[in-house]
Image 1 (cartoon, helix red, strand yellow):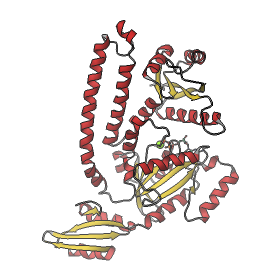
Image 2 (image 1 turned 30 degrees about the vertical axis):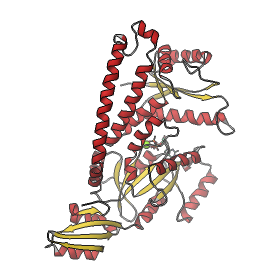
Image 3 (image 1 turned 180 degrees about the vertical axis):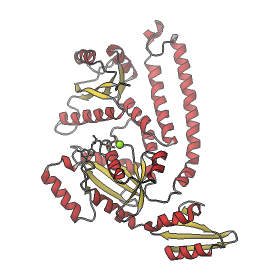
Image 4 (image 1 turned 90 degrees about the vertical axis):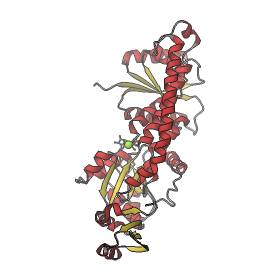
Length: 437
Ligand SMILES: Nc1nc2c(ncn2[C@@H]2O[C@H](COP(=O)(O)OP(=O)(O)OP(=O)(O)O)[C@@H](O)[C@H]2O)c(=O)[nH]1
Ligand SMILES: [Mg+2]
């Protein structure tokens, strides 16, 4: 299938941007929209900033600019025009008609991305819920009175209002069904977590603003270590891979969906659900684009989302900050940062996921941070397994012991380096201490 072409428009309001350079701010937003568009496999053939003084109710954009764009669209014939703004259903319909092309506003674009990225069942349901709610609002309000009298035309094609009512009802039923499924998924979520935790390796989650380079870093780190055991994770979930740290410790690296500013409220729940795996991470690596002019603002956005998720990043939950893309910085700045890598034992680590510089320091820091933590586990042994019991005493710190008729229950603290041996030896008998057996 030929790649689909897209034109991306960022609509900004004149004189309303924050900061002393509103144009640069708009440029950053346009760049972001271009990146998001490319992320769903569209080829961006043109990108423009449209400055408007005030929104026009019917089309958002004033007629002069509107006609100019119509000309551009006729010439380039894109399949999709992305308008980086919130469009009312009427505006979207009018633009689609006038330009004879599909129009996605910012909400619809982000929905598309979430749809592709949601991995957990809960995540997928949340995204579908948001999608249908969005679709339903379009369905109802975009149908103007006049069109209804004429019998209507456009997407629905059916006999006027009756068709809309039917579609509304179908969507309503589907929404109710999804809500019920969500309820049941949430009830069983605890069980899923327990199952995933049966692999008792620490989980390291890469989080960060969209386009910061998480997936590139994920690929560089995992490609350097091709191991047979990776296959298991690759088939279960392409964004989770086992890697080894310099101290031979095995961890599971998890790539996650990027954060986006100004998330439309109807998408917030869907977004959080796609970040579910971060809740379980033992270590969070915050990947930042150090070359981005809004790097600090992005950092603020990311930390806010983490705290909204109830994660005490950098406090209770260990956090490493990775300053990525330093290959794009001035040599002087870059060298300064790299010197800090060598000198400081905490603080941010400068890296380039593309050139690979700094990655050794990053991996070492991961090992140090995780090494501080002992893993608490619950172990069940048969009363007759004296050998297992002796081995456990030799290789861990036994916190408590409960001799029962049906066997022994131990609570133990294990050095992360010993985890692999423990899990190979005891498998299902071993559980994280935080969970009920
Ligand atoms: N120059 C340079 N470019 C990089 C580096 N790391 C990533 N990139 C580029 O940045 C862009 C985004 O990288 P991704 O890895 O897709 O970013 P991401 O954080 O996974 O983005 P989302 O999945 O959208 O949240 C790509 O074009 C990468 O090639 C780096 O260290 N240096
Ligand atoms: Mg990515």
